[in-house]
Amino acid sequence: MECRLRYNKSVVEKGDHEREDVKMIYDVDTERIEAQLGCLEQCLDVMERSRNEWKGKSEEVIIFAASRALHIGVECVIDIGSTMIDGFMMRDPGGYLDIIDILEDEKVIPTESVSRLKELIRFRERLVRYYHEVSEDELIQELSDIAVLVHYMDWVRSYLRWELGERDPSGAS
Image 1 (cartoon, rainbow, N blue to C red):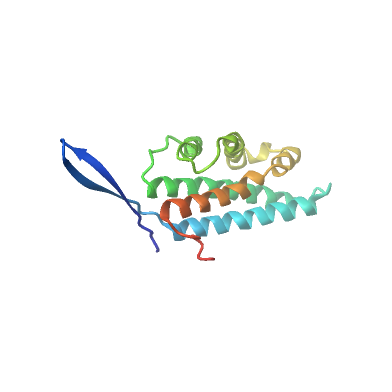
Image 2: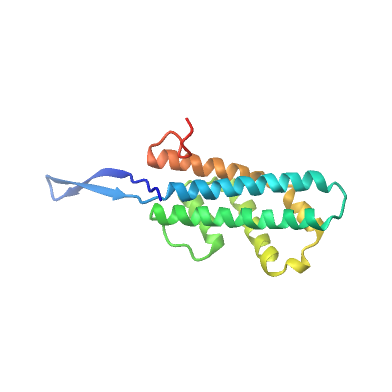
C-alpha cells in the first residue's frame, strides 16, 4: 500500500518573540483512491454502454448492468470521499450526504455539484434497499445526468495534486 505524506509548515507566534514550526502530516492512501477512481471509470463505461444499447429495448441484462453500475459508481464516490476525509484529517462525517458537504467545505468539489451528487446518493439507497421499486424510466432519468461523476474524478485528482504537491497522482505525466 502506497501512502503519500505532506508536511505543511506554518509559523505560530508564542509570546512576543518566540516562533515555532508546526507540521501537519497527511496520511493519504493515493493508491487506494486511484483504484477506486479506476472502478468509478469502469462503472461509467458500463453506464454509457448500457444507455447506448438500451434504446427502447427492455432487456433485463442491460437494465441490471446499468443499475448495478450506477450503484457501484455512487459507492465509489462515497468511498473516495471517505478515504480523502480520513487521509486529510477533515471533520468526521455524520453520514453519506455529509461526506459530500465536507468535500464541498474543503473545496474538493464545487458547490454547484453538491445537489446532483446528493441526488445520486439518495437514489443509491433506492437501488440498494428498494431495487424492486425502481422503474426503468427512473433509471434512464438518472443515467441521463451522470456527467457529475466524470467531473468528480477530475476534481479528486486535482485536489490530490494541489494538496500533495504532485503533478499527477495516477503516475501519468
